[in-house]
Length: 430
Image 1: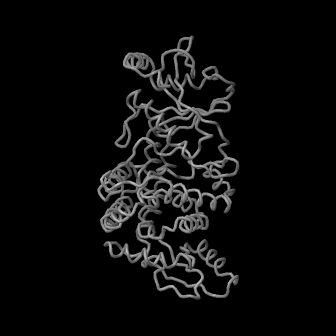
Image 2: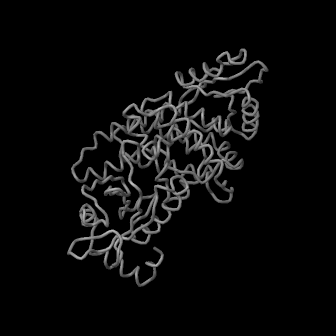
């Protein structure tokens, strides 16, 4: 694919692209003969920045020529570069899913296009293997088919993935209080402009800003201690699919490094938020507690509820902006406004949730301490900390408290560890 790039080709591509508007490009790629393989019925999945054409055994993701405060796809070269970045980053999660970047070229007939082959590239697409949309975790949870085993596997894999990623240096500018403030301001601005619940949106915005200011020391400590890493960045349930019954993330946030290099618990906060939004509290806390157990990152509890609220705000913004785009074509914004209101309400609950009690489980080996603690966690929204992790959680709370942030003991286990204690359950924040 690199052979297509030189100044002459780039100039010719701009000239060719000027003959095609976005609607013509979309219409041409809806035709079966645009593909080099059987594609009897083309389906299109649309987001606010891209379209995915489901054609036969493959899927082709094409960027829209849009420009927002968080992404600029206004030039063909920017869209092509982003395709290459997406391919590289997503192969970290799903190498068998992401195949290559292919050119979209003008076809022999007027108004036609073809994927691949000879000709001047008009656009570029990421080519992926197609999967059953019903295997998305978002579809599974809606159908009541998301199983605890899937959640356990996701918790393990994300803990391992995060631990394997490089940590950001403080000088990189990622994960700093200032960077978080910018992201929060952009998100709140988008929601505030489009939401039809101004009172709730204003209350959430004010509370979120106060929480961000209160947690500034915690954010700096998380960065200093190596918890800001190159993550997925957009890990909602619609971006996780079961491949051979294994939860596999895909479609990571490739277009903005500042949104991808984030606190690892912010990454996990997205599926936790999504499960809470779908009314699956038991699965949300199963995922959270499984991740904490495998990562040992109990210090993250100090900032967790802020990041869960932040993820709800991100989702509300995307929902509203996508609906606003479609509203121009006559679509109603009522469903999006309803969804955004529920997301704002979830963000508010996360931001105002008060501290809860702590329960120590103790007894003989095999008496059911861990089983009961897990059941309490999933039924009531509690964190669980096994005895072997309890001391480290206490130490993390002490150090983070000394760093100028609210100690974990406000929302998690911090009392001295009793030799007879087997598990600790503490009421959770989200």
